[in-house]
Image (spheres, rainbow, N blue to C red):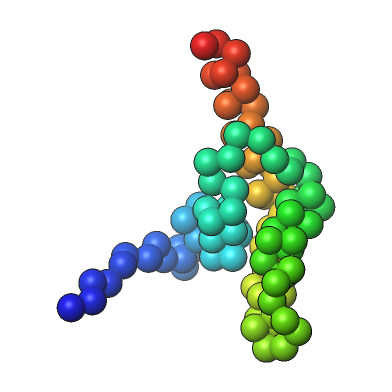
Length: 97
């Protein structure tokens, strides 16, 4: 028997998803950047990093078009800001001990 995984929902009052701008932003941050201790810290770097991972091995066609459409919804600046905060915190904790 399959179990249903509880998926967080969008907050209809403010349009946000799990505290993030939208589902795409939350999902990319969770799946790609969560747990990293170093990495891209500008919106452009984050976008390039993810596009390299996601789009490189997908042949041209419908799947690649869907992936591009999904990525176009991501708030890259929000991810970059979160990365900066996380990396600074990691480095501070690392320096302490």
